[in-house]
Length: 172
Image (cartoon, rainbow, N blue to C red):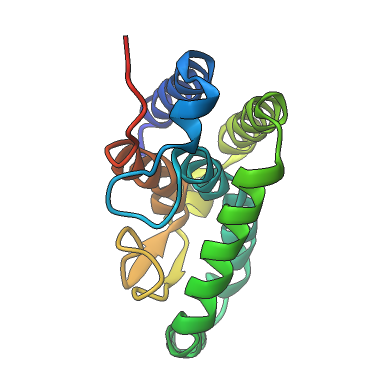
């Protein structure tokens, strides 16, 4: 894994998040996004959420990556069975967070989260980065059946870039 490339991806997303929120008017943020049920502000929160969940995903890989392969396979099947409730919580959480969280808090939280991910990534060994587990592929199009810790570090930026294309916020 090229750690420098992942650091650069995360920094690019952080900068983009700032540019999007700094340039958007309140009416821009209330405008419907393209292809989701969220408005732009709620979708931006959802994009932030993609980075927030990484800490939990990293812990899961650390645990399941040490267990027999079948353990994470069964866990992924269980999570896939719960896709409908997950989708409801995912929608409602992003709707609520994007509705009530002030813009300045979203920016500060994004910055703190990226900084923490940079520190964690710097401390990862090649052995840890190669450890992996099965994931619930029905939860997100960027979850693969089997993902290494290195894959998990790249997930939120792929998620961010995909949803960036659904924003209807004008750019300079």
